[in-house]
Amino acid sequence: MYDYAIEHGFIDDEEEYLMKMGDRQDLRLNMTQMSDEEFETHVLNGLRKCNKALGLGIDENQLAKSSYYRHK
Image 1: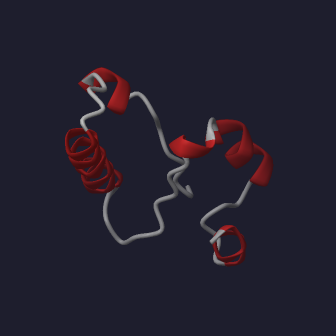
Image 2: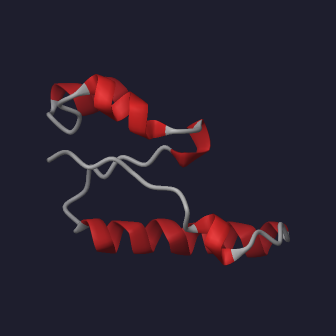
């Protein structure tokens, strides 16, 4: 996926991308036709489902604190 993202221009500045990446579980790269807002909503809904299904009890604010990198 990383090579694909580089080759297709989703990541145009590797250093910036890697600096913003954070922890591995926070990696989000929007390679869809969705807007950033729609993409983030889908990601957060998925995190909510996992949190509930696994009974993790992670606070909603903690789920939403991560960010993702979007090609400019």
